[in-house]
Image (cartoon, rainbow, N blue to C red; front, side, top):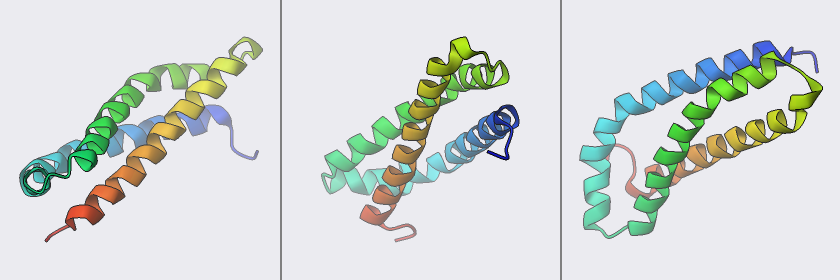
Length: 111
């Protein structure tokens, strides 16, 4: 409770964008060194999980302006929307984190 929600929302938005850009930068390595062997080994469910991760993280990027606006304008009218946008972003973030580790463990980074 010691953190102001508005400043915390700004930090979340900045960190999401930085993480998105870093993920986009290493995506080339994934496409060439990890995805091709996964397809050859027929790990279709793992591929599907990662494809869904890509889509959810991009949707989350699109939700950031709404998230930031709802936390900057702390009106009681926005309480429900603020809660649900926060929950959706949290679920997307945890899904992306866990799927990233699953894909990394299936192929093994650097192998």
